[in-house]
Image 1 (cartoon, rainbow, N blue to C red):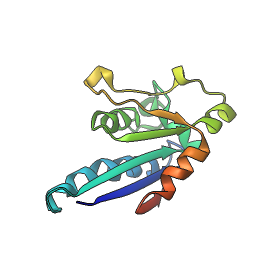
Image 2: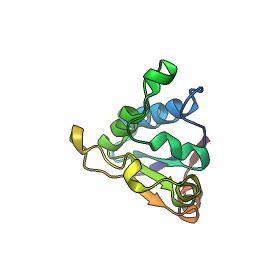
Image 3: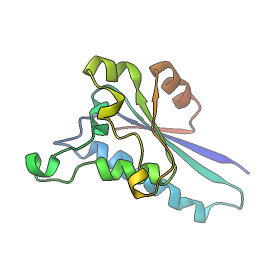
Image 4: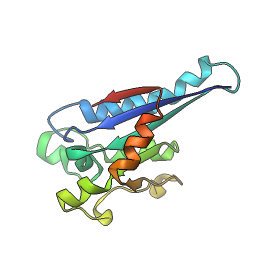
Length: 137
């Protein structure tokens, strides 16, 4: 019984690039590989937003109005709905002048019970050090 831990670091801005969306898509899709694993084996993804990537977590994004694309808000909520661990860097929130109220912290409106965690960068680094595979977006 082994657990393969996958770390997804998102440091890209939410618009004008597909990087952030790909990180969340890959993290969500990683849950489906369990059908190919031995009984008891698991895949455990964790997504961490650092630097400008923290801006992906803003509520009420108007991406369709501004850029003609859907926002990452629903993608992030789907991640939380799947009980995925989502970490948001505390120091970067402070640097960008963001409060917890401005961020998507849960998916209660669609039945999710898991909440995103605001974590210091040191905790995010410990989490990333414990992963088997680390991907940067």
